Image (cartoon, rainbow, N blue to C red; front, top):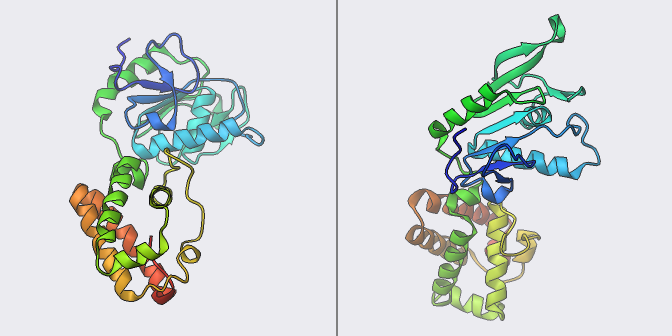
Length: 282
């Protein structure tokens, strides 16, 4: 069996001694993973009430699918994969998934109308409903991995370059804003603890872009309430937007900078609609 290089590991939800070099699956590993493996574990998939670990696994599988990470599931792992793709899961031994919409059935098992999709594929998702994965299915999946090297960003945060990129833009923006004739006095009057302010704004952007804030807790609050009563007018908001866009384009590739600019414009429109004389954008 040929495995991917160590810098693009195979992630797995359960230990797989027969797959050397696999590592425990985590959301942070999806960006560099060669694939995600969902082995049979015999646990329920059709009814996951009271099983937070199953919900966490579903979130991980969904993240892998959004990012274009190849996924191979067998047994209850195949049912988990089907559920993440929106298919109905039936209770059985093990639980099994109906054929997801758009999937290609490669083999069926069972008599007549009770047939179960034994082997199916949808894009880079491959499933085997039985608890024991055939060697040929495993070999075919591994052979396909070199052709599945492209990745889609799993979130807007990943698309802009992650929390590191956001932190860099936030820091550079506020250095420029402090020196700006229009914005500088506003920030000087309102911000006493700059390190704490930068952390809050970074957490805000990370959260708004679909992240959880690896460097700290996610931002929680109300954008309008947080910026009410600061005496900011339309001219301040327009300058903030222009300065934010210029900073993003100076530091990031064009697609990432445009994504940040669009999010800022949307927030600016919300704040402006509520009355810019009462609010300041972050």
